[in-house]
Image 1 (spheres, rainbow, N blue to C red):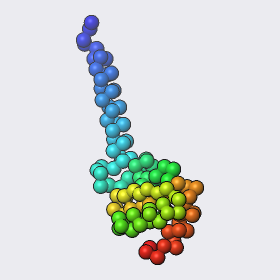
Image 2 (cartoon, rainbow, N blue to C red; image 1 turned 30 degrees about the vertical axis):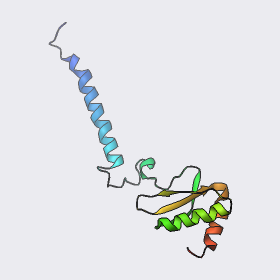
Image 3 (cartoon, rainbow, N blue to C red; image 1 turned 90 degrees about the horizontal axis):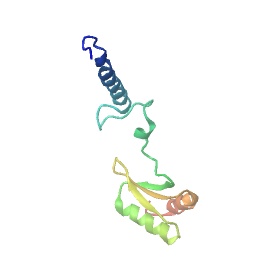
Image 4 (cartoon, helix red, strand yellow; image 1 turned 90 degrees about the vertical axis):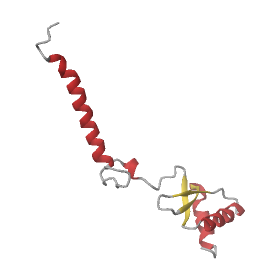
Amino acid sequence: MPTGDGWYLLGPLFAVGLSMLVGAAFWRLVGSGPDDNPPADGLAIFGERDDYGLLCPAAVTGEPEVAAEVRRLLAAAGIRATYAVGREGRIAVLVFAEHLEEARRLVGDAPAL
């Protein structure tokens, strides 16, 4: 096998270069650290914060006691509810989409909120 050509180095060099290019693209799309916000034109899954799947927020509060009271109020009306704590510390009380309007009406009528 002749070693004077140098063509056998092209495969690994190409693989390293391509890996660096893909890494730089992801670095640009995601940001340089966990505290950085991704750019608006970046990957949507990294910037999405309010996606709860099949659940929708019926109320948002900063106090756990208020969130527990809202859950009790909704449970008394026969609406299943749970909660999720966001990155900024706010608590969202979540219900299924088909019960969202009724839950918001009940929560809006609550005197504690």
